[in-house]
Length: 147
Image (tube, rainbow, N blue to C red; front, side, top):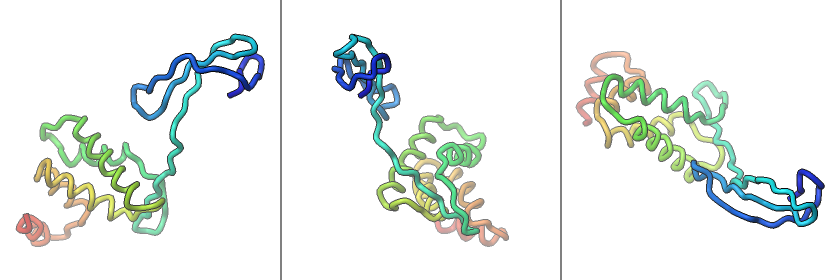
């Protein structure tokens, strides 16, 4: 690690701690040449998940977009925002473990619906109605009957 003051490559670690989000490690260092102190951060390099849309386009997986869709699905139902964030984390982890770099958008919806079904059936139906694009009451009722 280069010292920001004298550019020496020799330093020692004084203290190491995880950041509050747990995604990186904060290291306090001291240069062995000039005794200057500085902080570095170490994090795992993550490969972005690309979503293959129905129209063939690709875009990065967006956690915030999924949280927004879940908030809409839950509507006025009482749910802790942390539960929604946990669902998104679980979905993202499952995507990363099952798919290498690209995932079809329908797989994201299916994994999300599977998790919603366990939390709140009304939110599941709301989310499913957008995903399945029901064009009639009969289609909607058929999905309800499956439950």
